[in-house]
Image (cartoon, rainbow, N blue to C red):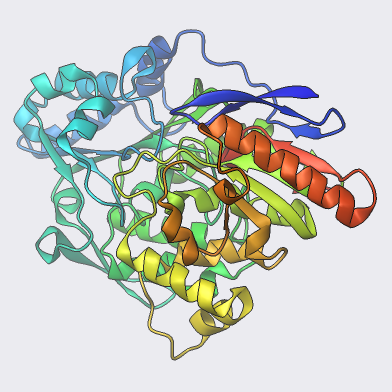
Length: 454
């Protein structure tokens, strides 16, 4: 047996896997030796455009009372907003050095369609010094019309309503993480605005059934990716003065800091993350073990860990997905639950046919259910062994996968549950195939991206 370490962000554990299993991991990328100094350097000498201080001073010359907004990611993303790798405090210090007073600066969390964070969650996310500055701290609410203003129409044909507090500010700064994304190619940059600051109805622009059915709307693909292209168009329409994005390694350490103009900055970060997150794969597997990572705060987010298995799993293969859910609702919102019930009732092909029908009325969060179908088109839902201790057992009567606890009712930890699920899968496939099954372990979960190479 071979010991494999799984880091799910909030918890870590080691499991033993068959010695013949392929351990598929991200390439090594050296973390920054002095991230605190690197962020200061990046704000002074960005990848493109003027320094942050220069941008602010030029704005203040024209409008001494100008306001600045710093857009932040919520707690579903491990962006370093505190500690030695904190990117936020240096930004705020630069804004004030350039002449802005605290009342002229607001922080805005780009929650997209996610719920608002609690006070406790906010406090755990940011450096305590940030709260002592007396800044205005806001959370986007995509369902509150009073927070939204009309921005324009998209190329695809939808009306775009965006956060009013963002559009009111003359100085706009986006922060976040560039990692692989199963719809947009990579996260970061333009996604802080679109969908991060859009109305719920406007999310159809990026997440409608037809756009997500594109073969280019997938991990680590930007060229011809309609999600990336439309998000960029909307973000440019809204405007942005500087992007501050980071890349991380599998242990969530900062490997790069990228600053500057919207498109240039994303391209630099994309090249960086692709250089070590892409995993060349030359065959398909009977069994794949993976996990939902830090982002897997609930079942909704765990789709990211499952969808990337689809290209490398054999037809009728077994996928084992480990997830540690920290959200107050370990499944997701009511729309997501509704769509997962429909998926379970109809099956993948009929579900996709339904949401692609021109008469279908778009349901927010249907996109995540659509992402599960990428795996379920390759293997039946009962071949997805969902390993979690957090979702009530009765929910699996309608969630379209198998609760791994039914295979190992005596398991009292996630580590034990994953181990027993893997042993069960190996025994099952060995008997079914009459040979040793081909096993792969995606040790980095949704962050290491297997790419089939001929």
